[in-house]
Image 1 (tube, rainbow, N blue to C red):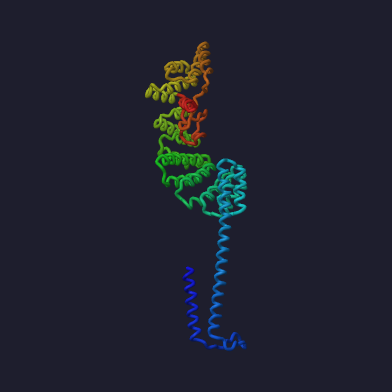
Image 2: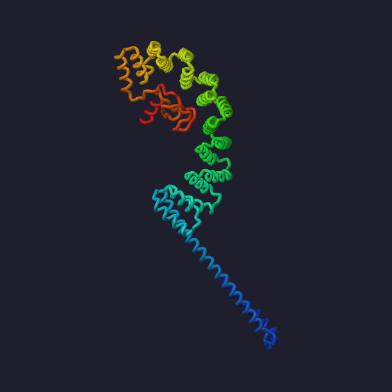
Length: 445
């Protein structure tokens, strides 16, 4: 490159010499009005022009180089600042992951001090404040993050979460709607929206969202679960209609549920309650009988017992018990219920015969001993009555046949159409054989 430059300089001087040889004359040069230089040699004019051009090029090159230097300096400065910010953020994230929350908060605060719109640092500070239950500050950080990234999924989810924690459900739903607008077939967003409506007992809205969930691409297992929930929400809406006096709507919905799932015990029981509330006892009786005929559930049998005794027709329920017992003679739980019914009706001898027909080795329940004791007492056999009561009291088991959830094994003394533990519908059964208690013991051991 240096040799080429020397060559160009020599070539220029040679050409200049040739030009000077053939152009030895002079000219008058006027710079301004009234300002003229006389007899300026042509070669001098060329040299002056060339010098001005070279100087101008030098100035332009100097300005360009200075500009490049300043740009490079500014870029390096920004890069150093960004590296410092990212180092602080990285350390803060490690501290957050290690649950050193105060250290993490200090580092993230340093980050937003250098870069107020650092979205990730704002989100992490929001998370720390949320964890400390400082929901107002958490909301502020999340809102600032949203300004930086208005359509960030993490930001919108965080805002929905913090507003839900403040019981501002409409605001939470608004941000979930923004998320659904971004990805309308994401079941996770729809689950959260549905759960908010469900928690607020907005059953019509819950059903609407549940319908959208079922249109998403779900695994076969999830689809089965969500279809069961769909029926559960329809059931809750029917109960709501019943509570608000819209009995026709409630009855229509409950019938539709039974048509869809013939084993939905809660629908039979609630439909019977709806008919009873309307003074239509025959329809209530018919639906309970139909339910028992379809499901053979002891829960319905117990409800039928209450119904027939309340209307003064105990013979009908006795007949039902006997038919069920003849159909399945090895089901000693039916004999147990028959014995209880006889005792309740003060048919002591019949109760005694029914109890003795039970194989104690095959069916052992503390209330069986209680029932035996009561029967012996009514027969004035106090010694045997005392022995049976001792057996019942020595047991750590409850003296009543409890209900239990067939899904999570939750035990309850009262019937419920929805398990309070796992929130599944139609799972309560009579724990006659103490299956739930046995399973709980196995799981805890």
